[in-house]
Image (cartoon, rainbow, N blue to C red):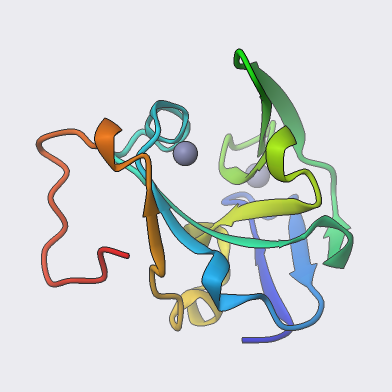
Length: 132
Ligand SMILES: [Zn+2]
Ligand SMILES: [Zn+2]
């Protein structure tokens, strides 16, 4: 997967990821932030170096304050689509929501790791593997 591209629902924000993303950073996250940001039970994301991303348009960033970290959640301020999250604990990386990738670009994504499983909602049962 190289030269990945994606964007928001309305098309006013586009991004391109240069280089080859590290497949170990393909993550399923059940943390409470991800539940609220996505409106679903978990987020599926891909971590890439922040400086490997070329943007067209500027996402809006909302800062979530935690006791030991700050998490930025970036979204389109026109259509509201979530684009990425970034935590101060892993500041060189941005974690793109896989659903924001162009359809064919996201097809090869597979979860390699599940985090915050203890926050998983009882109804959020993933069928057919790919649990990470
Ligand atoms: Zn948009
Ligand atoms: Zn999360």
